[in-house]
Length: 604
Ligand code: NDP
Picture 1: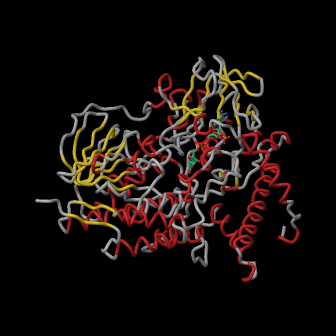
Picture 2: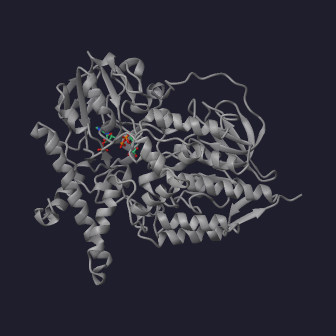
Picture 3: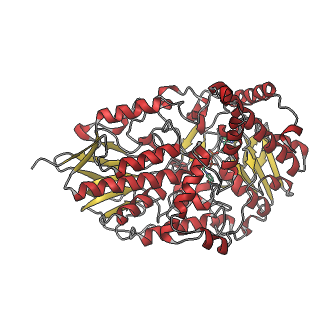
């Protein structure tokens, strides 16, 4: 169908429908509707994959401690090693490297952003992703590959959680205490704790009373289900009735596997995900060999980011759902006459393109799902970036599998859990197992998610420093916290479609600064108050965070629909876009003047 053949969109009717659907879901308790996996649920957090081994507590000193052994910690550690900083210790709560890919081994787990840009350090390790969207075991193996190649296993502490980080100004070093009795020091600390590592459960009444089996998707219990992360069928579910609560990105990936494995599967839905085409395919080694010339991954990263963030891009190397979205918006804006390119007209063009895309996604549901009522209930009524966009070619098809039932709660969620099962819309569904695909803490304070606070210069805590919201330079440095670096996207590029790109650039920058300090005999690196303030002012001069519209249906992208306030405004990225940010950061770190930082020698 050409654009001219398409029926005109009734934008006002769509807006009205979106508002109605949002209003059904707004609730006063926001993030408080969820609960942590404590008390009776604490065992849900046990590591089902690697036994914990005894070891002596560490009381030594290292040059750099890296908190977190996921992508953020791995790329930072790797860049440090590359720079010749050998004495690096990674502290990781899992039993191995991998972070989110260590914990999330649910059936069907795979990356949603193309492997060629999602998997870090491909060129350095020489790994060719086997698929456009690699599955979890390959990504986990890649994490181990990075750990091995860069010697990060040598000094790593696994199954270890940091409990406190305290700055010792007299000796220019951090004191690190852990849950394994370690009490060691590090001149520098880099923290890559990830945004999605604290699983949460819905605070559904009666949740404690269920007498059957249950677990969270991030601790998949293959001993109960049978099968394995590599895709062996879950043969122990053939006579089981299973409920899965939640229909976010995780459920979209694991429901197709459950649908074929269970006697009966009940999928409890509060808000449908938008599920666009995935179009996964194996990588052709001949194509890869010819494409992967020196510098290829950096070129792909820059191309993807340019396509995503309005940077210069004549071609689209990745060609996926993310770049399709931005290409369409750009085409609409480019079609405007120069004199019409006002903010209002550009926003209207964006909205039109968004509605068009969502109509296609809703149309896809009708084309795939056989039962019209189920199809109606699987349609997402919100703008695409209100919730995490999903891409899958078997999820919607699952509802055509006999024994798979969508239990749509029309925005209200599960009512109750009983000893026997799950209650929704007044009916009890008796089940043998409840799987919680209920996600992770996102909108809560950094120190709550980290599970430790930092005590910086003069005894000031990070939780106090950030009481009114996050304040950094580049999302990396915080005034009053010398030699501490944050590896994460916010207040940097804030490129949500490919988080690893943010992390590799932050890791590279941190390695350059630490190397500079060591080479020149500096003991401390700290951002000045003025530079931090100026950065925040620059961020606030932009249009604000990409995500978080109060018009959206509630979710972690908009603080569950609660008042966003000035703290939320600080979740912004560089106002000129991700491509411009990475170019700026590259100039900043290669200038060797590191404007805004003070490099100090300790008093003799
Ligand atoms: P989400 O937070 O996205 O989803 C949680 C789900 O639980 C939602 O559907 C939510 O509904 C539902 N829910 C919560 N409370 C209730 C209730 N009382 N009754 C019924 N349903 C309820 O978690 P996910 O684990 O799916 O995904 C988290 C994030 O992890 C993703 O957004 C993505 O960033 C990342 N991820 C990435 C993947 C990848 O890149 N390959 C794969 C999987 C996840 P509602 O929407 O109404 O709140």
